[in-house]
Length: 626
Image (cartoon, rainbow, N blue to C red; front, side, top):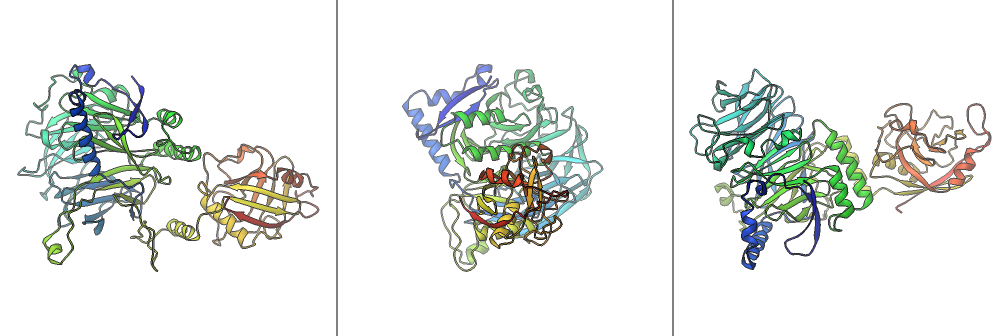
């Protein structure tokens, strides 16, 4: 049952569009939403709720842009914030990094090559003191977070999936649950013991467990399998259904809802008070459940259809520019089709009243009680599709050593939202501070190069140092002027190569060496025979295909090549739709003025090798920002 509900921020200034669906929530079980009735019972309740929201919002990051970003050597896939004020980041290449939250920002502590394969599971203990990781290399590793040292390494005889600490803070023994990636078994380990003995093997599910979290306040574990079935089980010795729930049979709950939709769970989060938990799934819905009833309280639809509806009918504060929205949606389709991309998760704030999750338009902060979008973080960051999130609130605890060293102590909180992004080897920090413009001789920006930069990072830094790439160019030929629109966002390397050659007069005097009527006109070879030309880097560079840039119309500017990833300096302009060239040649521009000039060149007389009998030359190419 889907509906489009227009909601307002807590200050009543802006309207937002949020597609929601109440799927079998309190209205179904007859309990109703007690909080809603209380807050709507009079002005006092409503005022109290608004006051609570202001307090909760003040404890969250508020900057529109990320303040800093730090590097891994591969795509960042997992993030954790511990109760001991550490931040753990993990990347696809099995690398693990420890960072310490300081009074302002973070500091790097230590780096581990934890696994030889991507992480399958990563879990922090309830007290923040122990970290466990698993991977398909059949390794289980345990780290002491406070001493940032590895204390145990267990070689498993099965392929592990997710893992979770199932013992509370006061437990006498640290028990870790490790799911089997190929069966429904969940094995319990005394993770600190070096012998790797299995304490017990459970079979709570009928399929492999894909998400699993400890609800410490309720003394229960919530897990979901690959079929979408959600289970509760106690962390006591019996591991039975907890007694602190209000249902006897799962048919009285919505714990089968994801399975009915034939979706697979992708992430699971539990509120600090244990009263709610959130699950994301492959049907692109975010579901908020009440723990006690197992009923769905809220469902947020993040499908492509709902995103298009929001873009079309949403408020201006929510809507993106058409070009930006189209580009983000193309990235979104690629992200959702990727098999190993980190899933988007849901984060609860410390009050348990707000949920935070990443979307196409930025990072949403939603009031669960009113189902209102009350803050949108990172909307302006249009080059990152944020995915996995972790939240730090309050202020860091200083060690005795730091206090004795004379470190200035501040009483101000420093909330921080830590994010990773699709296909990015960085993680990003949103705080209450906007990024500062670099100053001084070093010109250090917000993207910190704490690793040896990759070739792509160096090229990006060089481009940023030179300023934005031109968006227009005028090709002055012996037949007249051809004005082309360039696409630096979609194919930055190709546009940089073309415009740098143009500014260096590389193309001046170069002839159109190949002209085929009804097909294309080709140039860019200083030798004039189609065998020469090189890129500005002195070697061939890769193709940059984009879904929105096709050879679906005449007067398309595209790169000539000798096969995949062999671009140099030669380019051509089509004279008709040439769709068979899609995903073979990089489209990086369109003719916007001077189509008659292209048609004139197309009609020149050529020899049997398609070379014009009378030379048609490029006189110069002038690049422009607009």
